[in-house]
Amino acid sequence: MSKNKYWILINFNNSDDIHKLISLYANDINFIIVDNSKNYIKYNNESIIIPETNLGYIAGFKYALNSINDHSISKCIFSNSDIKIIDGLNKIFEINKDISNVIVPRIISPNGEQNPHLVKRQKKKYWVLRYVSSKNSILWFLWTFLANFRKKINKKLIKNSSLNYQKIYSGHGSFLIFNNIDFSKFKRSSHNFLYGEEIHFAEYFHMNNIPVLFNPKVIIHHNEHASTSKLNNNFRRILFNDSYKSILSKYY
Image (tube, rainbow, N blue to C red):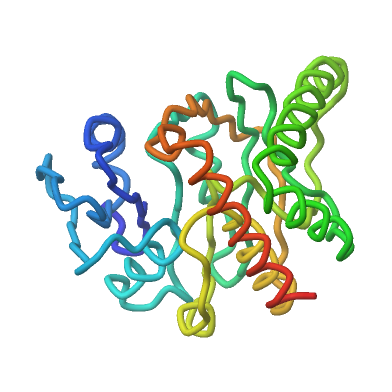
């Protein structure tokens, strides 16, 4: 097992999914589990760290980084647990050891393709619209309805288009591959509890000239049954609103 290859996963009542991943890939990579729900049962030789309180997604990732001696010379996967690597495992860490970059795979979910998440950095009005729509439950219902309709249209269009290797702004947060990235400044920054992690990462990489590369030869299936999907709709709206507020205040 390589000492410099890590896979960080957040447990919040999703131990079974985590165990499945460990059973498949424990010989190839070091697993670090952040036990937010404090009910994780050790499966193999994974590292388990238990914070005092539920840290959420992105703060859980930062907490796990403390278990890595030097992330600037390490290769790290950060992902949801409800995923499966379909193809390209051998391509995930094919990179010159001296290069810092982010690899974004092709992610296929029941709702269609999830990458590239954002090819270009969006203007302020893009986030203002999302922030305003998430302040009110009726507006949020209309927004999510239209967004889901758009996803269905895009799903049909993408089937007929080619997915090309390219440099992008942001990858979907359910599966990210980090190669030799110094996260020291990122760890010291504050972030919201849930959602919007793609943008927090993208902005950090944008400000530090770290390329984010979409590689469609690495294929991931995302089941989208993670614990966040079980949250009350109104509570999710509030969390999204907080994430948009955080993005606007930090980057625009």
